[in-house]
Length: 294
Image 1 (cartoon, rainbow, N blue to C red):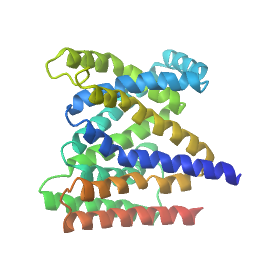
Image 2: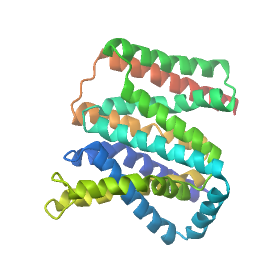
Image 3: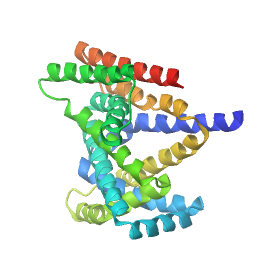
Image 4: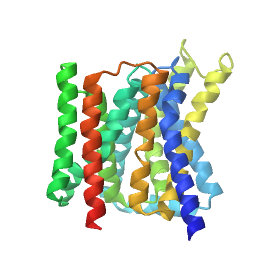
């Protein structure tokens, strides 16, 4: 039992470390625009996930899930929506990293768990304890501080939080194997992504050619960067309690925050610090109440 839990913890730690340092990877691809990177990410994620399905013996499960979707058009529609929302999330994240908004992305992913809680209350009629309502209010105070400081809503953080929370809510309705799900999502996006990749390859500003082999390999590697953390996350989730897994999820935005401040040298003033203090307080309050309720 201890060995399996240790293996799960290592897998979860590796997952969130990879997600945390992804801003560095997208920054290496800054020569390409966000749309081109997104299209390559979809295409190569699909290719890599097919390899994962075959190598891990999940091909039959994938085929069964495809048949289920074909018979149940409503679930197919939900999966299409999930694919659209995750692609919006990916696009916003890539654009933000390559336009010096890494700190905003970290704030978005700090907010995301509390946004998911809010969605649970609104769409799934889940109930919150009084103090848990306070945790959502604290996060809202953090957003209000950023809005006051910026003179406008912190749209990058909000788009990332809302799209990923919506994606999570849609996935909750599907109850699909995560390996099948990400493969199907990228498959559904392939009719748009692949022609766009072909258009970019034939264009003058092509970044996927023998003239730029390093960049071409990095674009292909977006599939690996997407699929490997997913595989590790699935493995860790099967071996760890949700409470432990929930703790690990704050590693990646913390790494992104540190990268934004110390590597990308983005401005980080008193308003951002105060906003994060409110958000962190909300997270700590929510997790504390959850622990007491158990």
